[in-house]
Image (cartoon, rainbow, N blue to C red; front, side):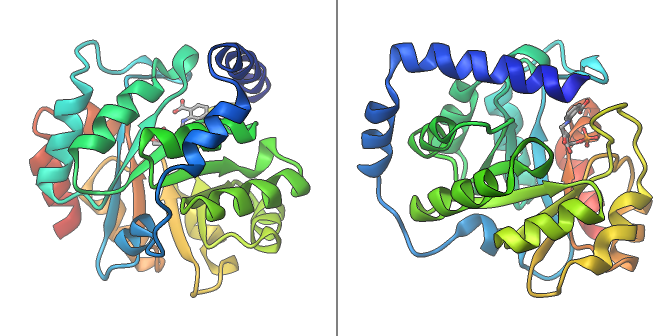
Length: 259
Ligand SMILES: O=C(O)c1ccccc1NCC(=O)[C@H](O)[C@H](O)COP(=O)(O)O
């Protein structure tokens, strides 16, 4: 099952990273960075209209290579220039061909907040995200215990990082809410078999109280899709492949925002 493989490979990667920079050293580096009261990621997604988290995504387990040519920094800058509200950077190297170094460079160059999109299974990855300049991290309910979810949320908050908590069903939404999530994403892609059911986020929307930020993740292809999301009171969409495959990313973002 892909999620188990992703978790296993991520644990190996983190173990290797700790050989280079220990947890204690990464923690010290993270703690040396300023913690601001404002949460730019949350602020960016709470605006009126449709807010877009534009994803920098070279490859995926479901699609293989999406972008042979991958000028990640240029892509991120064009998202920023087009009026995207935040940027998601996939940092998982094996299945998504991502890198924390992409995030570090992008965060230093863009004016909008950057999300570390990875399979966070160790506090080390949260310190690493902070040091690289992320404004937010992703936590996936399906790969964490309740205790881990709560501890990781608290750690991220203490570092000034926002957290997008990803759920797939009713039970995971309840777990996210109980853990204290402020931003809840529902992935329309089933991470076990890769099927995309766009109605998943629409169906689960009503389970998330209106004082939380709700994000629909995956499967947005065209302006009509965001019109449909808005009809279901969904005002934030995380969009990857459609933007990555678009020849005119700026025009596509503008079209989606104006839909
Ligand atoms: O994209 C995949 O194939 C995938 C497979 C297994 C776990 C996660 C996966 N994707 C991560 C994401 O959640 C998406 O990159 C993100 O929501 C954007 O989706 P899309 O707009 O459909 O590229």
